[in-house]
Length: 379
Image 1: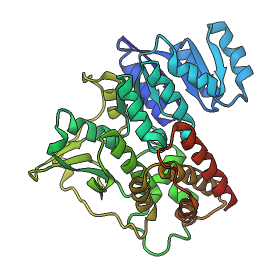
Image 2 (image 1 turned 120 degrees about the vertical axis):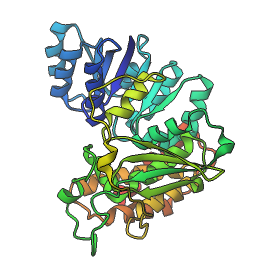
Image 3 (image 1 turned 45 degrees about the horizontal axis):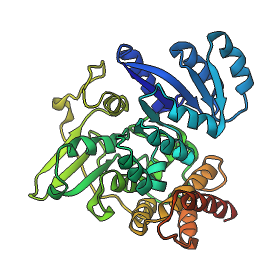
């Protein structure tokens, strides 16, 4: 039985992870649960899975949670220290990172240094400090398992392949809710942007999907995970969302990963690797597929994708700035304080104002993140 910790247990990835544990109670034991602020949901999860302790990142509601969990003998921690404790907890073998934003950056380093396998769903740590994360994982001989459906697809296609045999990586995108929208994006409403055609996700990543920033971030993430320069990573719009990733070999042949649009598939593989487990999910019916479509994304209408490529090309501290500015911009859009077109405009302005830091350490990247947030707020 594998002991796991789930950081971000009340979000969509966390809920899917716990669904897998329910399906395979003989395979996985939940030792730690952590959430940002949903104390009630965290209480319900703790009552069901009986972890050794939980972490409520934002302290509001922590005292009430402590009172409710005391009869069960479950401790409650808070803040960054709580997340760090969850990441290094000795009985845990694998930590699932599903926290939104850069808050998961320090806990990932803590888990790696403690020798834990890392299953990562949130893009930000690898975007902000991908070089350092990969370097640290190699130093401590700790595996990093991608949970993102696209990166999991590439990981599975690349297993056992020599880097010299790969010509390029191909990430697919559903295109989001506005792929075929005619006319200006200026009048796009928040309610429209939150309606993703294929995936059910949290609000931040759903907006990233609408702007295609999620693909910009995924290009940076894939570049770090698979040690491939951005110009060898292609993004294709694939509306059916059946093929999640492909690789092209130097001889011109391709290998693709196909599957239903359900995050439980990549999560389960990250938990069970190198084994594959049975589940009760529906499978693809190839007879019903009829046809698959592919097209190049329109970077003029979706400039966030090109901003992602630019940040990857520049490297160093620029991806951290891109990520931080995007978090602020998406936050303001979710609060109806800027319009949809204001998201890429704000990010680009912050990027142009940034003085790139050469050979940044983790502290440099955290400072760049803080600077970019303040600059975005000011703008």
